[in-house]
Image 1 (spheres, rainbow, N blue to C red):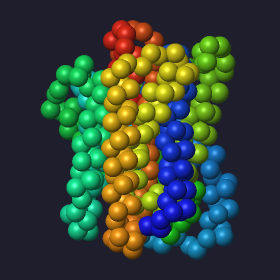
Image 2: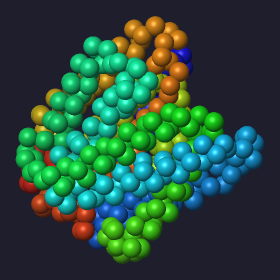
Image 3: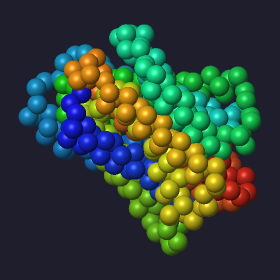
Length: 355
């Protein structure tokens, strides 16, 4: 991985991508309050984003070398497993797990990436990376208010780990998809994932309900198209393209840990846009996540230039990817068949949820 300006540009793009993904909660919350199911919101987000990227992606394809057969297979797998599969696994996980536990299981995919690089390519994680991982995971548990979520169910755990595999697949396949422009890779994955989600909804694998009524957003009433376009343009199209572009400037380990900042941005937007109150534990957890990422970055800078980590990029920010949905009311959490998903605001029974 190149140092200096290239690494700085990659981190900047990664943070922009994570922030864009983090806006999904504010947009999706208004749809969920209006009666949309999480599956409907996610499907609309992915399908519309794929449609928006179609024209520029086709133009880039005309100017680029013809994709290889392996590249096409990787894109198909990426869309089915990393985009749609991660969503479906998460939906099923939160049926029997608290949403915080399900989220933590999904984010364990970051550790799966580290393990995969070690087992498959011999990249043993160094001490600072291990310490950074432990610190970041501990901080994530505080941000998600994990101590207030003790529900465990073996079936739910399996589904949660399935979501983690989807997240890890996103990182690994994106690292290999370097023979096509980032926009084309994002478009291909979203298109395949969108078709998969539509098929899942058609056969009843996920509940899909989307009443086309006005919604509440930022203290006023507006058309349902506004949050749908926000999800598609900002939290999907822009987020994916900038994330993939960032990944090609960063190593796999650092990139995957930078993806954790998406949760921090989601909590921040819940505070700024939805008026949620941040708890002291969440603030401390956010600092720990940042400290963990800083340790991983320090380890990356200490790695000899041209070392094994230098040549393998990975995607930044969480796949599909899931929706982090914030502050949809003060009542108790609801599950995906009518879910109102929120981040713990220090009052009521709110919990952080990905949809």
